[in-house]
Image (tube, rainbow over all chains, first blue to last red; front, side, top):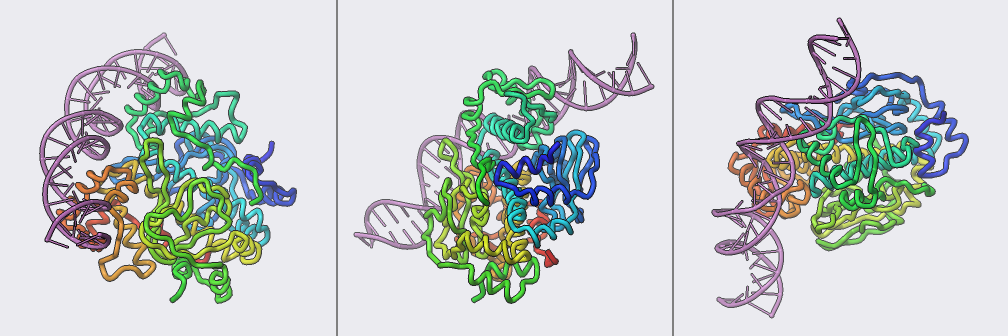
Length: 239
Length: 239
DNA sequence: CTTGAGCATAAACATATGTGAGTGCGGCTA
DNA sequence: TAGCCGCACTCACATATGTTTATGCTCAAG
């Protein structure tokens, strides 16, 4: 099975065979992390970056009263801490939301890639830029959308991102995330997450039972969430 | 006068003379944008990136009801849209908050830098990673801190960032930002921004008259805002 | 000087969302 | 098969923040 990172990058630009080989060879080992365990901890100075091959993970910070904010949700093909290659010190933790299969890429290898493969370097850079674009979108949704709109927005995004790495079956994706975790993502209480999900269900926009999330009315969901997909850079272009 | 970008990068790592020269030569022209004018518009596909030499600028998005969210505030030395080099399409606009002096760096030049100067490339990449780290910090503050704490946090950050590029005089910085703009940054109404500022003043944490912001009690301000500066990467290291 | 624009400030009131405490279901595990 | 635990879900009530409207200051333009 092909590396989901290659799948992700190939949606944004063309990769040469040599570049693909280089990426495959960049992986030093593969490990499994169980649900609810930390993959990287805040304050760590990793010597390698983690690429998510399978499962769901989240970047998070804890604030004083013990409350948690999730600043990113990750699906297969995402680098969880590619930025630690240059930022050095982790400004947040990364948590496995489900059992995760993770490929490890040493920073020395990344350095070699930046020395020898400019185009591949740009694509890795692009990867972190997309993370940033998602952060900006979340900031906007959090600051200026209602809780319901924010939730609709998040659902649109996750559906597209999962579909982009082949994890959608029609209008349905597996989304093994609790309402408490959704709350920590949206900056809401779990009670309010529940209210908002019920509203989206009542409006006939989604079905969400167990882990199965189904989009019932994509157009209206997009409208409610004021969603446009530009920021996900799902376009193939020369970069 | 030295380029504030070089000043900024030199705080994070060492630059060779050749790298500095390359950066200086990367500037194709310098332009001035008046306050309240757009520097780049959402949806644009710029052929060059803008480096802020002087003034204040903001990245922003507008949502349906006309409300605005500012997703980044920029001070001299910041690239406003370095990411457009690889993301291609702007997912947000950039606005001049004051008169801005802006250096323009063609994307073709950036591409050449990535082809020929790996270390310099990593530092430019780092620049965008710091933007991302700030986004994450803002997400956390917005989602999980009270309005007062969030404001305190923002003030701590802006003070340090301005000081880092030599724009602080002792405990005072010039901050030509209206309360409405602060509201759009924090996701608050202007009325509440006013309340929160008064509280910080009453607590003896800051003075803020006209554009002059003075930190009166740094330690307590940091505590109130739950501020730690790690995410700004103000450390000099090999990258 | 007058006028007006832009901004900070204020008070009264409205509401989206949070809090605390609880119920009930379904799936592990003993 | 019993018991427990995590999770979705509910209700009553609390509150942080938004909305509307208005005042007064400062500064630039006429």
